[in-house]
Length: 340
Image 1 (cartoon, rainbow, N blue to C red):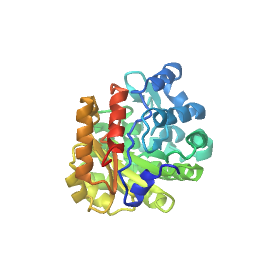
Image 2: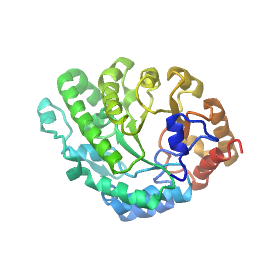
Image 3: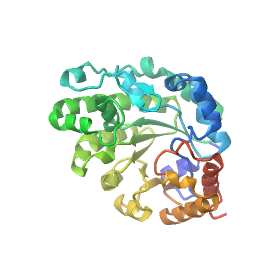
Image 4: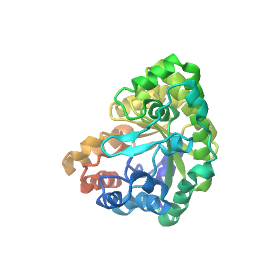
């Protein structure tokens, strides 16, 4: 690997500067991405290996981060499990037949990964060829709780009350569905590692919707199964948005790194996670709209606060579509210029 800074940080090694990448870096802020988006619909891009590989590599050429993340979507997993998922313009994910009963849960399958998600593995192989060992490649999946939220709610939501209500009214069925999602996700991520990704990240986008007690029962318990299953094979990063309250528990797990959002200060994140684990984050994506000199100053300050070791510079959530490319590049460059 020509640039292994990212892997060094995951191993907790001393580095000259921390590595940097951005969640959703293969995305809508890039004109090159938008050109492909205008030609092909969302799931066509996910399911066509050549397109997924090209989109993954675009930011490596343009803004030059220290790691690539495979272009895909967390909702390819429920699709593989026989749950119909559509992507609607200006609505986002839409599931026409949400799961609302124990009978619905019984119909959900644990699929054969190669049969249903083979296109993702083909995308990984092509991406690895295109990257030519320049930087590591990250594979990812949604947390079981986050997938569950979409499967039960049927679409995005500010509070996921229907999904939460299902857990509290039908706990047995809820746990059965969460376990099916977990088993599928473990098989899916293992296959990604076997195919060539260098690390995996679990996105718990909606974990912060739960109380700390409910988080342990309906989210962390299942994420930890994934961590336990994957840790012997690869580095696992866990990112829970709004889940600062679980950092202590997460810090005791076999995860190699924990993602932090911008609502938790570097000092608190280090303290809550026990101070020994690599942390990733936590620049507010909206802050990339600040003037470039201010972005650079804030990035330096953020690295100073986290410390350069056991740290991966990232955003506190995905990059926004309205961020100018030169601002995204300034974010990356600020990290590369650190302590030079």
